[in-house]
Image 1 (cartoon, rainbow, N blue to C red):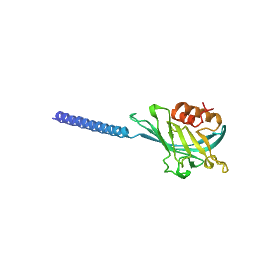
Image 2 (cartoon, one colour):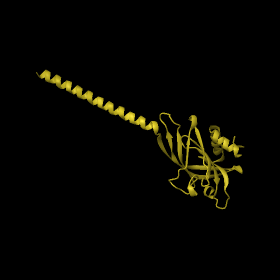
Image 3 (tube, rainbow, N blue to C red):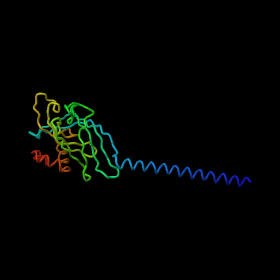
Length: 208
């Protein structure tokens, strides 16, 4: 009699364990499906907040350079299933002033720039037209830790109040001429859009 009861209890325990395993497996599958559905349409985002030194190379004299304090605030957008191109978006501040912002002052609500990496390119470029933008075109790396921009170097950028605005390349990160020119050449070789813009605007000479 005891053996029969023990056998029944063992059988019930096994069924209970199997039911629990099945429920856990079902929850895991549903969680994975929810994860897959979400990330099929939405990118995995990573916030970027970098403070570093940037280098300005001036168009009228490309051997002249000036170091500036730079902040990059933005995010990388990675599509796990590769159904869309990865992208980056953000804003860049030089000496506390946004090079994309309306009024050129710090504003956490600035949209800044947004650009996609086509065909798995390591760099992406975006033109930024508009009278309120100091930046004319930007090219950035996928992890958002390298950027080269063409900017109007006004007093907010250069810190020289009496100077007239002059077009310059803002290279990030760089603290000397050699580093800056090396990153510009890398950007030019990896972004055809950026290279074409520089050629069309008489920048490319001396940077190839």
